[in-house]
Every structure is written in structure tokens, then in C-alpha cells.
Amino acid sequence: MTNPSLIEFIRKQLNRWLDWLDNLEQKSPRSQKQAWYRIEYHLPPSIVAVVSAILLYFSLFLGADLTLGQALVLTLFVAIMVSLFCVYMVRDHADLVKDGDAMALLAVIFFTTILLIKAVAFLSQKYYWLSPYATPIAIAPLLTALLLRQRLAMLLAFVVAILFGIVNDFSLPVTLVGAVGGVTIVAAGSQARTAHRVARAGLMAGFLQMLIVVFLAISLDWGHEYTAIAMVSSFLSGIVAAVFSLGVLPYLESFFSRVSNLRLLELADVNHPLLHRMSIEAPGTYHHSLIVASLAEDAANAVGANGLLCRVGAYFHDIGKMTKAEYFIENQGAFGNPHDQVSPSLSKLVITSHVKEGLALAKAYKLDKQVADFIPQHHGTSQIEFFYQKALQAEEKEEEGEKEPVMEETYRYPGPKPQSKEAGIVMLSDSIEAASRTLEEPNHQRYKDLVYKIINKKLFDGQLNETPLTLKDLHLLAERFTATLTSIHHARVPYPELENPKKKDDMPSFQ
Image (cartoon, rainbow, N blue to C red; front, side):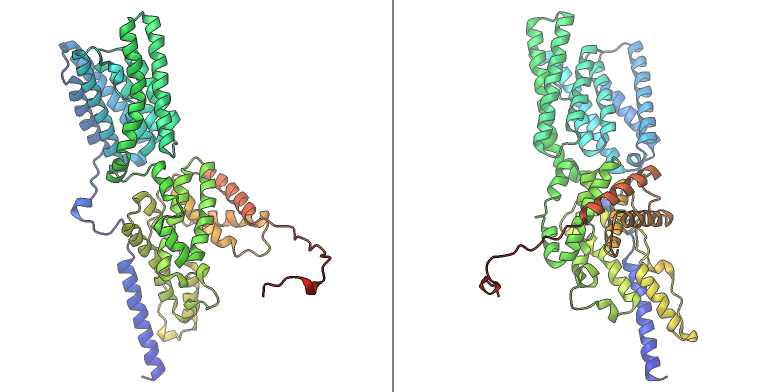
């Protein structure tokens, strides 16, 4: 065996070992073995419905003095309500039904509110100065809006209001006040990004509840003392709901792996330690992330997705590039491209490793799960095209007997594919921003052609299959991407040099 042949043999064995190591280490985070205390257990919706019905039934009957007929009617009512709610969840929020943390959070919010209603109703019968209207039932819809979905929170506001009235002797006025307060606090506070906005939503809910109490007092001829107590109680309940929600929000976010707009606004601060570090160690990647964030946020708002979540996810999606920043073209200066000195398989290993490194950094800096999910999902299982083509070219140059087939699937990212609208939007924004830098003499039409080309490519490659994005959404996204790129890379008119009456030799010099 000649010396060149020996070197070639060692090189092939090394590349084979690197491919094996890549496949071993670059598994999807979802497929890695988890510790026993982190394993997620998912119960079928039918079992969740039965358990919820039983808990709701006993919580309503707790301390109630009902006849047999009333008990049967209440049982039928609970069964119908739970069934309708489950059908609504499966049809309109199927992704939440599959999310164990989300369902557990919803159950905790709902049943805690029911127990709170029962407690205040019991105490109001013993103490005349404590009115049932003091129950801060707006806690349930507000927390649901901040941590889950606004539409779900609206429905929950009516469900809780109905149960509020049932517990308080089937009182229609109590139901009406509870429904108005719940709907108001969701409408005013669901998109809140600051504690001030949440507090203001609670104030609005309390004020409208008090107005409804005044209307009821006049219509039903309540006594002055009862009316005064009900007015003060209903007003304070809205404020208490907002204050209590702000107090428990960080704990619910942490325990149930949720992230609210208030938390996202904290992460959007460019002085975050990870972002500050990236601006120093990988300035090109940092600038790229800022542009991707602008593209993603504007596009997400156009299709009804969470623009703030897209912005924050885009900020952190490439943090793994900091560990080997010089291997990514946006960070390469005048020192050349290190990929020119290594094989395509080794380059592929370095490129894909930024996903694993990014997840490690996210864990070390305690980044929220919903933000960290953008790190593997923004690439999905996309092909690493440049190095795949480079590997094919290298294969063609090898002698016939020494060729090793280049497997296309080994030149793909580990995934998973984007699981949400926001992750899909960041994937498209990332690819579009990177490709837009390769255009020569860019203009609006060329940007538009590029955007549609990349969206079609991702669509036909199956990268968007697991997102709820529709074709209509993709057309809206393409329009927003094109408009934003055109505005970012706008042209400027050259400024003419003004004639200076002074001689050139008399001009000050900074050299």
C-alpha cells in the first residue's frame, strides 16, 4: 500500500467515524432519554374529561344542601358542560390537548377558582359584610389568556361565571357580574406586555363589575347596605384578580413550562447575558439574528401569530454558533474560510453541532422551553445543501474502487420540524435573510422571487407539515417578507460634495 493510499484510507476511516459520532450526538432532543422525574405522561382526552367531571361534580356538591331532584339535574348539567368543553378543546385547540403541561395548567386554574368560589360563598353566609361579589373569579380567564389562549380564556370566563351563579344559589345577577368581569379582563389584559397593563385590566374589570351591580341594584330594588357592600366587593375583586395573577404568574410559567408576554419582554432585552455575549463573540450572527427578528415579528403579526415570541425566538435561535463562530460565513473576516481545509463530512458535523451547542447554552442560562424550542426547530430536518453538493463533487473525483456513496439523509439537520406557526415563521425568516445577501443588484421584484422560491422549497421539502400554517398564511408571509426586505435594504441618493471656499491644503486632517 503506497503512502498516498494509506493517507486516503485513514481519511475515509476518520470521516466514517465522524459520521457515526454525528449520528450518535445529534439526535433530536425529543428522542433523547429523559430522567424519570422529567418524563411527560399524556392522558387521553376521554380520561381527562371523566376526571374533570368527577372533580367538578364533587366541588359543586361540597357543602351544598340539595334534594334528590336537584342533585340529578346538577349531575346532568355537569356532564353536558364537560362534554361540550371537551369537544371544543379537541376541535379548536387540538395542540393544547396534546400538551400535558397546558392541560395540567388549565385544570389547576379551573379547579382552584371553583374552590375559591365555594370558600367565599360559604363565608358570605356566615358574615354579612362579605359579599359573594368579592370572589376574584377573573383570575381564571386572565391567567388562561396570559399563559394559554385568548379564545379559550373567553370561553372559560363564561363557564366560570355560570358555575359562580350555581354555587351562589343559582343567582343570575352573580352570573352576570362574573361574566362581565371575566370578558373585560381578557379583552383588556390578554395582550399585556407589562404589569401596568395587567393592573389596568383588573381596574377596568372591577369598575365594569361595579356598574353592573349598580344597574342590578336599581332594577331589583336592593337595600342600600347590601348595594354598597356589593359595589365595593365587585370593584375590589377585579383589582385582587390582577394583583394575584401577577404574583403567581412567574411560578406558573416555571412549573408548567409556559411563557407569557411579560416574560418575553424581559428576554427581548438585548442586554441579556447570552445576547451580549453573542454580540462580542459572533457579531455577524448577532446582526443576522436582529434582522431575522424584525422579519419574523412583522410577518407573524400579519397572520395572527405571536410576533413577540417570534422576535425573542429569533434572537436566540443561533446562539450555538458562538462556540465555533469562525466556521460560519457571517463571522468570517479576512482570515479565510476554515471549511476549505476540511472534508465536507467534517464541515457538516461542525455546522450541525451549533444546534446541540445552542441547546446546551439555553439549558445553562435557564432559557424558557418555548424559546429554546426555536433552536432545533428553525432548521427542522432541512438539507445542508452546500456541503452535500461539495461531498457529491468530491465523490465524483474519487477512483471507482474507492468511492463511498454519499447518503443524502446524513446531510440534514436532526430536527424536529417546526411545531408551531412561530417556529415555522422563524425558519422561513432565517433562510430568506441569509439568501437575500447573495442577490446582485437587489430590487423589489428580485426579493419577491427569492421569497416565493424559498417558501416553496420549504413547503415541498415537508418542513412546514407539522405547523398550522395555511396556504393563505404563506401568501401573507411572502408579502410581508418582501416588503420588509425592500425597506431594510432600501437605496439612498448619494450626497453631493459641497464646494468649500477654503483651499484643500487648509482643510483639517485626522491622519
